[in-house]
Length: 295
Image (cartoon, rainbow, N blue to C red; front, side, top):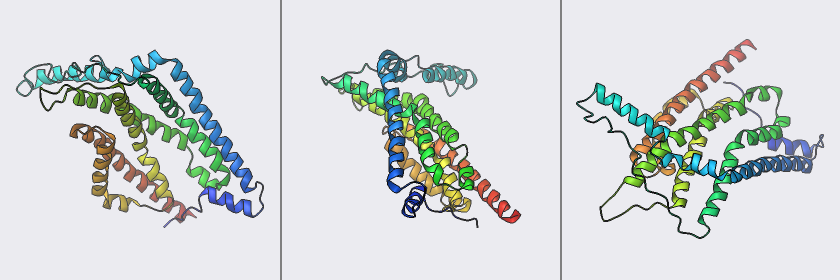
């Protein structure tokens, strides 16, 4: 079996500080502080830009999934026509999947509701857009404490982690959010009850789904590092595949609205990412064994 990595860089920094190396422990804390300040500065700067573009952010992005002409609804409607042409015995009308037509307008019942929602969306958007830069600042802090082979191990981390994160964000925005909004806004237990969604509940639903999907799509990155450190193996991942499906369903139930369809939509790509992670873990193990045999 391949060697496990040494201590976490932060603890190695502490050890170096105690041994009187180039930088003291307090100097490392000062460096960490400035990395955090720069990351926070990037978030605030992007949040200000988002705040100043209110119309584009809310009318063009946030509220787009509740309109009937949203991309997802148009694709479903066109697909419905195709199904009607080829499977008329199952889809009697060409508009069976044309949803998103009856989503009610949002209401604000708090004096400060619109302003606080504007600030919350701006800050959260700043975090999402600054995600690659935040990763880069974290990398700059831990890089001096790594050995050359450990630095090679993390090569391309920022690109792939950012790619997966934004892929999850787009999946949550274009797939999960519009379908969840349509289901929840049109679901009714009785004709005596009218659904009147508020601005806060709508924004909370959209942002929670979008950001959570972004972080859930980081699964292959997590598996990569755990395999590199020897904490997990492909055999371990294969053995606990069923357990992961249960965990994925639980996570899907937490981050999505309480409808089975949305939960399955989130669970399906997670299952695919898990299988990709198994292949990635197997590739890493083969590469490490080959390197040991060569050495």
